[in-house]
Picture (cartoon, rainbow, N blue to C red):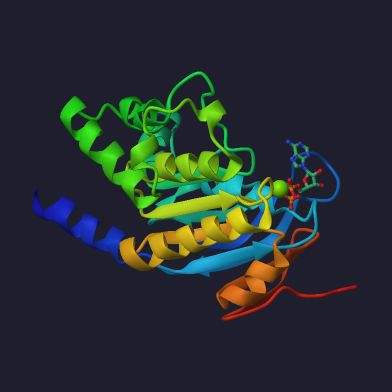
Amino acid sequence: MGPFEKKRKKKRDSHDAIMLENVTKSYSKGVPALDGVSITVKKGEFVFIVGDSGSGKSTLIRLLMRELTPTSGRVVVQGMDVGRLKHRQVPRFRRNIGIVFQDFRLLSDRNVYENVAFAQRIVQTPAKEIRKNVTNALTVVGLAGKYKAKTNQLSGGEQQRVAVARALVNNPPILLADEPTGNLDPKNSWDIMQLLKRINEEMGTTIIVVTHNREIVNAMQKRVITIKKGVVISDEEKGGYIDED
Ligand code: ADP
Ligand code: MG
């Protein structure tokens, strides 16, 4: 590593995990989905994003994973200005981010192992390392014993744990989850949230969770950012779900 790279690396490492600076996102003319949003998330934080349906939560997640670019303002993830990335830089950028969705998005005709290994094949990890990393990720989520099962034979909770393993397997510094418990019963919802909490505490992963689960948000005593109609209306350490009705 040359001196320039060293300096650049140091600079990058000193950044916050996520910084949104006055971000507006409009899909078309009219009311923007996000309007002047500024949020900073430090490395290793665990943050809930809450708000009514249509308030702009998924738009925020899609900006962070660079599925979208902001109409104005800056989105900076791990020191990289997401809006300025060239198309060819996006795949490498994505290695910084693991993502979990409400609907699991697993390959239903493949087994558990293959679903997790897939994320590693895409980034061209050597075969020997793939085996080690997949086994590790499945161990973290408690599914090492089910690696051969077809995902369509698993319960919803198990499927979401496979999705978490897949999100973790490249060891990303940031994990995003967009309503990860939306399709789960209360018991499995708790298990998934506890799993995310443990990953945050033990691996130091920065975690952003969009959720409607008010009971869990209130119990976990983490930072809570509330978005309403595209605007951040509250941001509290050890916050709770804001009751408006
Ligand atoms: P949330 O995840 O909080 O329910 P979204 O970010 O999905 O909210 O949506 C915010 C607003 O942007 C909504 O009014 C929604 O209809 C609109 N929207 C979301 N995605 C698109 C899209 N692809 N094209 C046009 N409008 C969209
Ligand atoms: Mg959404």
